[in-house]
Length: 127
Image (tube, rainbow, N blue to C red; front, side, top):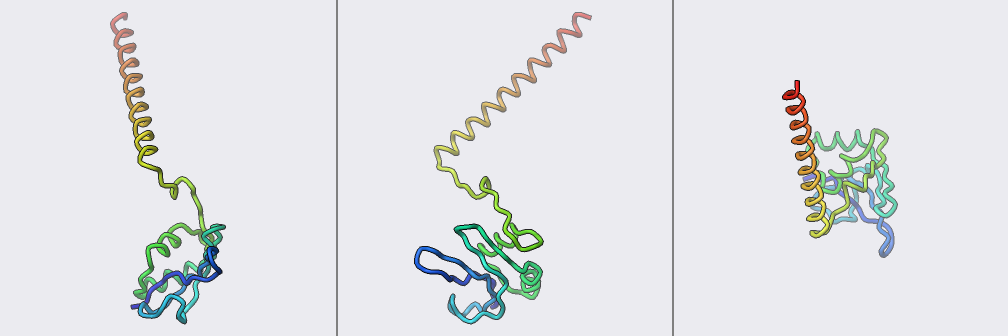
């Protein structure tokens, strides 16, 4: 099976990757069928030939989860569109706090709506 995956380059604790089309049975640093681009996770710099990658997917190549994410989040020029809010994972305490704040805002909005309705009814009763 043909896969689209990352080929690791760079030295110790400083990885850079090439996005390659390769036979699934080959080792990670094996000879690729085609190189589609490169990705540096530290600087979030990426260059990808998106049209060629989509052609390979149409032919039956299976992209890995990381490559799928990179393909989905790149623009027409092949550059990564990076949004910190999407990629940040919160701790359980932070998630609970965020949910509590959302519930409090929803309750406040419901109270405000009820108060507005009461004013409208009082205005109609006075007329």
